[in-house]
Amino acid sequence: MAREKIEEQIRKTYQTAFKEGIDIYNLGESLYRKHPHQWKSIATGKRQLVLNQDSLRHVKVEVNIVYPGRYKLHEHGESTS
Image: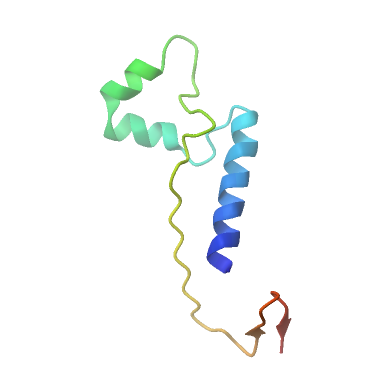
């Protein structure tokens, strides 16, 4: 459940930043570093943002609960101590 919520928040943050023209996760720079020729073909003229709404395709979230404390997670997301 935590993994799904985190993925949802990452996607929502990306979409919000994209609407403002911000590459919040530096995905464009990652493309530039790993595939500079492909980046050059996309980044034309004054267009600085080489991303589109669907650029964030796969999100892999791993959750490690190091110390769960005294909380137990119930089916409906409620926690008790």
